[in-house]
Image 1 (cartoon, rainbow, N blue to C red):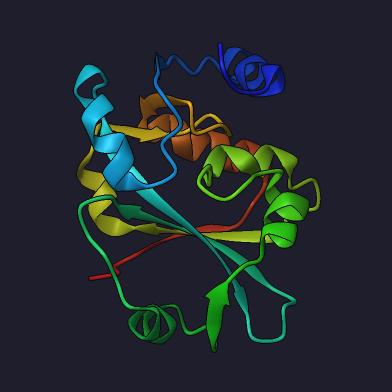
Image 2 (cartoon, rainbow, N blue to C red):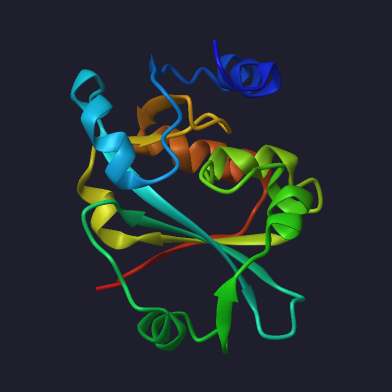
Amino acid sequence: MIGPEKLYKLFEELGIEFNYIEHPPTPTIEDARKYWTALDGKHCKNIFLRNHKGDKHYLVLLDCDKSIAMHDLEHILHEGKLSFASEKRMDKYLGLKPGSVTPFGLINDENHEVIVFIDSTLQQADRLAFHPLDNRATVSILRTDLIRLLEHLGNRYEWKELY
């Protein structure tokens, strides 16, 4: 399977069942849409951000069918001025490359520095789909299992109404 062995071992340890598909690299939602028909679950857009000072980092999970302006996101999250985190920061905190952002990258955030904001509309989905740290595959898990995973990893997370 594509993705780090430690992710799949953690799934096994936590009893997280998953569905899995492989596909060509899909760095954008538009690229990925043509392969999703084979996988049950609400697909998510994941954005890795930093604050103006660069001392706080955020992972925002959105419904893939929606978009939000950065200014609106700043207003809703009350975290000051935000910008996309650099590739270097993405690697440092999540062990990821651009086009592969996923909450599963939190397995690499040993100091639990990344704060996660999840679009509250995703609470209506039974299953959520993400890359397994590599955009050549997609994994779907139960929404409740995502929360169990986040709690196990120790990162602060919060459901937010983003629209």
